Image (tube, rainbow, N blue to C red; front, side, top):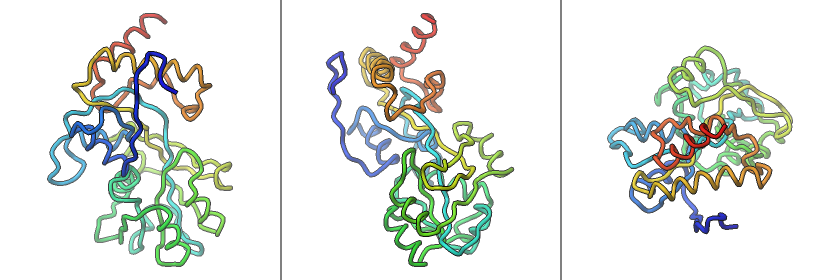
Length: 260
């Protein structure tokens, strides 16, 4: 339903987290969902060589952690992402948040483009290739059960732990990456990994009062909907966006602090 204040929000399909920030930057969208690493790297001009900083982004709220999973094809034993050297791995579609996080992970484990054959492809296609032996491993990230991961897990693909000193160093550089687990309830096995914060972002020139109302509506809806899809959201961490908060959102959080 529409927010109580009468705000009208229209959902538009997109190609993923990178496409979403580009749409906000160009003024084709006022609001978007993305991931913390994508937003931070884009805002600071580090997302890709030759890409200027995406300076129109502003944060509204940190939502919840999305775990990233790495799976190896049935019969291939990988103990860590470092073992991907010499293998082929799918990192998700071009422009997806998965591809950005996978890139950070490969770098953290000392792997360059020369060390690993990287494919940017959709998750379902990656799962098919993995099961036919055309791919050695794939990354996927999802809060809820991913159909592609469920398919490969049921066929004997093994989840690879993403942990250790390389991950600790990566998390020091990017504090919005979180130690988490892929839970047993999703795919039948539990594994340590990292997750990345989801973000609600907007354009910097969006009206301050409007963004204040939006932020307030978000938190009112968490109470009325029993959290629903955002049941794992840490409301106290919501203002900790890795890009500057929009003044309207900042005003809401200041008022929330004063009323505690």
